Image (cartoon, rainbow, N blue to C red):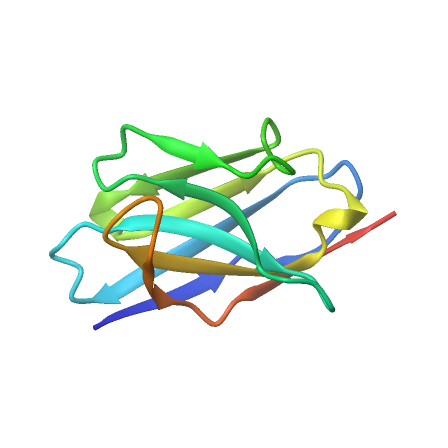
Length: 119
């Protein structure tokens, strides 16, 4: 089992930045692909970004491409999502996920962290 805990969410004005963190614990001796997803009220869950096990490849959702960067720090079992130029439409609960492949399926999920962008 792997436990994922997100942090770093909050309230920010449009145009601002946030960095989300996802700390993994449990059976982390195996390196997982890690991903970020988000879900706004009344909307389906949306893919944001993912990073490969080996850290050599990343993918981004079209709605955030160019504004967010996913990275990971193996020594801390932590993955980050740096978000810049935030827009009100980025408001959502952001979830961290872990899985075997960058394209999914995703085996483990965190509880989420709220990001609210004011206009």
